[in-house]
Length: 131
Length: 174
Image (tube, rainbow over the protein chains, first blue to last red):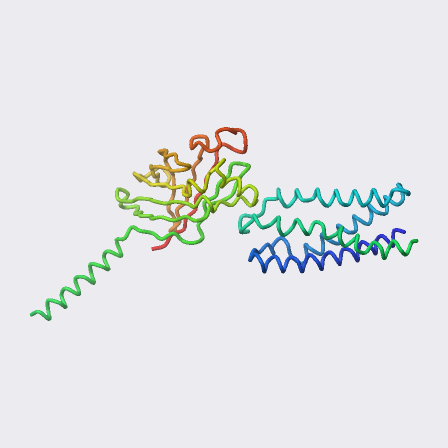
């Protein structure tokens, strides 16, 4: 069971990372704002994979303990968690050598939803295997 | 005779202009300056430093600073705080786009120098004394500014720091 969750998490993390890297490039190109010292390929891959592994553990825990309403509670928790993380890029103080901190939330806020979107995208494939 | 006169005049002008350049008290502000402020929360820096710096340690009587910073250039490292700082509730960058300092008198101090003059911020002019040093073509100074003295968000005295420590580091060149 946990193996399936783990693989789901890893693949979702990779998928979210690819989306994050593409979005970062588009954002840098469109706004000519460079946050690459903070948001770069390493931080994107690291954070997305970590986030999806955490999501996998939450899912495994939900399925184990909640049984019947597991999916409903898990989906709700994941949505609320993703939404509440918005506060981080809004409140973070960047190093002063980084110009246009006003544009930072515009880069990071959409990316906060990438792990959950990737998880939900792959969910039919992985949940089908267990049914 | 006329030919010699022009040659002589040219030499005089050449010497005079060279002497003027040598005696010039004016300094150009280099790009790598910093005007940082720290009030705990917020802290950050300003860009857009402009003005004229006339300074000669041997001629303090004729030395003078007329400098300003662009309020809209404030950077606290947080976009939301930058927007608030520029709003009419705080610095009101639209109505008061510049913070300026004009010295009236520069004198020698125990360590370095001090410039007495007027700090114009948020539409309020106040006499201040700016202690500074000048070493290796770099002006370094530090002052404390109380925002309440300049009517900046007096309605919320406990919102953020009241006293900002401002550290100024301005490399210059001739």
